[in-house]
Length: 141
Length: 135
Image (tube, rainbow over all chains, first blue to last red):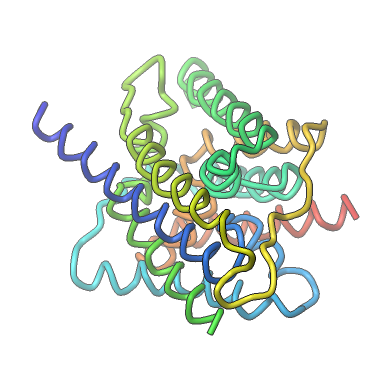
């Protein structure tokens, strides 16, 4: 059990470093912040000169997932019902546009460039998430 | 050329999210389950990501402009205001509700998770509604 946990932490750290590499690459070459919610939601607006790179990024996320699972099986346990996923998706979509960022934009890129607003946003969405998980268990849904 | 870089960045991001286990919503809920079956993996993910990103940004800060574009875009000046906090609350609710945030959910489509497709469709609807209402 302990060994399994350690491997999981090591994979977490390694994967995290890759996420960081992706963010650095996008900023170094393109001068853009790697915020997934911002990149995605701005694709819903009228096309401009940034549309093509944003689309390329989102397509690569999907293509990356597809190619990866061809070689290695990915375990994903989703106990959540379709109904819950719709509620959660609406909240995540609405909240990330209103708050101008998600885990990648505020949590990683924002904190990495020492943005106070991003630090506040990250603290708030983490505390809220912890509260919701606790509440759902208490209420039993 | 910027398109190639952003495609490459997306591929690396997808690999990072998968390897770290973040495409599995149960691991995310495990992190948020501070008063239950707490799983600290996400702390390691954030640490790894922040170490690399903060170091990289710091080094890039010495450059006048990005390699391929004219200027750095830091998404204008964000303030600590009501929309920021309220938005974070609403996002946090959804995040805790299903364990999905935008990145892993979009990668989940590629993994063939039908539930990720449902989530992303709802997320896009939420984004669309927010843009309609807020502007």
